[in-house]
Amino acid sequence: MTQNSSNPIVEAGWQKVRDDGRVHTELLDAAYAEPRLRQLFPWTGMGELHFSRCTEKRWTWDIPYIAPGTEGTYWALGPLRSEWVGQVATVQEAIALVIDRLPPNCGPAFVGTPEELAAHEAARLGLLPGSSA
View 1 (cartoon, rainbow, N blue to C red):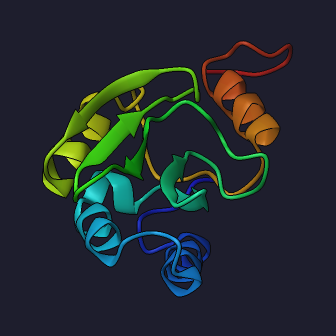
View 2: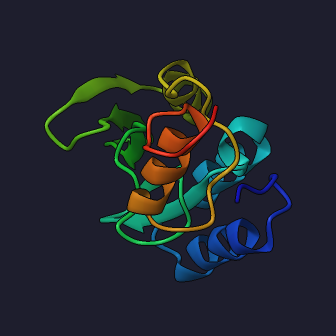
């Protein structure tokens, strides 16, 4: 089952990220203001802001994430830790880099695990035995 951006689980995730204090408020506010990111499940790691297409761990790793750089700059990285998108001067530029690299049909966060999301997507596309498109 998928939910819209007012999904209470997603909203609770945004509140948890805000409460833990590891991500700059400016970045959180800008990401939350962007509807395409607000509908995704946020999580943090080492001061970075990540976005997942599902609400439960192990979150998806198919969306770039944003990390603070030096002197007020931001890095857009990923989706894998070994991938570098670029360093930018403003949070708005970092958000734009992530938006430009969202996976196709990146809709509201799926309530469940990455495995459940994959099964849901496969069934929706008619790729599982006994499923219909």
